[in-house]
Image 1 (cartoon, rainbow, N blue to C red):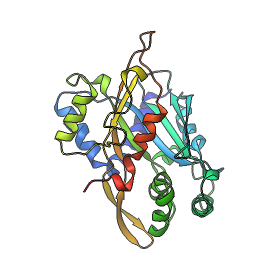
Image 2 (cartoon, rainbow, N blue to C red; image 1 turned 45 degrees about the vertical axis):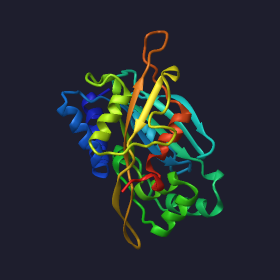
Image 3 (cartoon, rainbow, N blue to C red; image 1 turned 90 degrees about the vertical axis):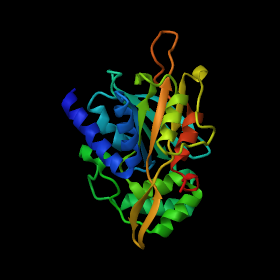
Image 4 (spheres, rainbow, N blue to C red; image 1 turned 30 degrees about the vertical axis):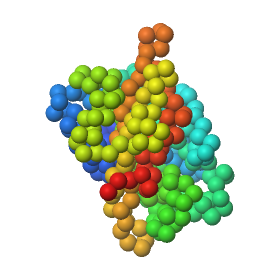
Amino acid sequence: MDQKKLDSLFSKIWQDYCQLNPQALKIYEAFIAQGEQVINDHVAYRTLQHPRLGMKHIAKHFEKYGYKEKNEYFFKEKKLYAKHYEHPDLSQPKIFISELELNKLSSPTQKILNTLAEALPPHFDEDESHLYKGRIWDINYSEYTQLAQESEYAAWVSAFGFRSNHFTVSVNSLKKFKDLEQVNLFVKGLGFSLNSAGGEIKGTPVELLEQSSTLAGQVDVEFKEGHYKIPACYYEFARRYSLPSGLLYQGFIAKSADKIFESTNRQKISN
């Protein structure tokens, strides 16, 4: 593995992510100002289960650096399927990729999303810049709102395209913050709201993973009808607990992730 190339890739993904989520950079810098070294637990992607899209089109760019497919996850209500990928060097961030199961959606929603996917140019995903390319199709705001009525996830993908929807601070790596409660108080003290769906902290020590996240901030996005402010990306915080072997649990908890997804829901965005 070429570590410099992988570091460079994550740097480019982070830069694109911060453009849509300036609150993440502010929180990151606030941790640094506290003398912390911020380690990224995982990076997440969203996509569509379509022959031209799907998680394999994202995963391949990480697999060439040694990442391997691990656990799979099912979200029946949200009609999502996901997997996470790990690097042999566990100091590297995990990759969490989810995809929307189009065949389980209504015909009008399928029509909009299939039209977007089928309009993509040939070989659009060959280069790893695909991971931070953003949206490469045009879409109406009216279509975005129509999608959101059935699936907030679908609406997000239609508006933002190919990019990470969140990075995650490893709470285990922090020195001055002993638990997720302290992290949450720190983040709220900076003026940012947290996703309270299912409680501010999702998961328990018994489940070996606790997570919290900010609410996605609103950004100005161009649609065919003009510019509209919509929720973009969020910042997550994860604390992992040890397995009987003494190693930290590396997986994810589906019922917790289900609520974390709601960090980008329109109705959950504060003013």
